[in-house]
Image 1 (cartoon, rainbow, N blue to C red):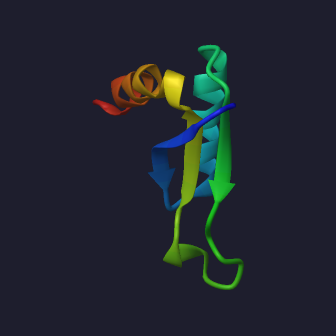
Image 2 (cartoon, rainbow, N blue to C red; image 1 turned 45 degrees about the vertical axis):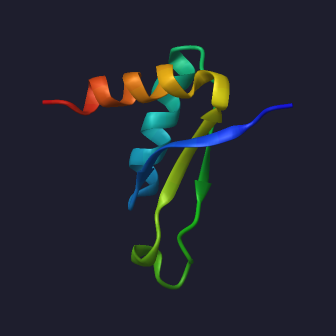
Length: 68
C-alpha cells in the first residue's frame, strides 16, 4: 500500500506540475493535488505528493533544483 507524503507546494499549478515532471524523470512516482478553489485560486496551493519510501530522495531533488 502506498503512503503518500507531501514534498512540495506552490501557489502555482504550473510550478507543481514541473516539479512532478522532474520527479518522474528521476523514476519517482508523483502526483499533484490542486487544492486551489476555482473561484479564488490564490487562497490555497497545488501540492506534490510521493510515496513515503521516496520522500527523502524527492525532497533532495526538489531542494537541489531550487537552490540558486
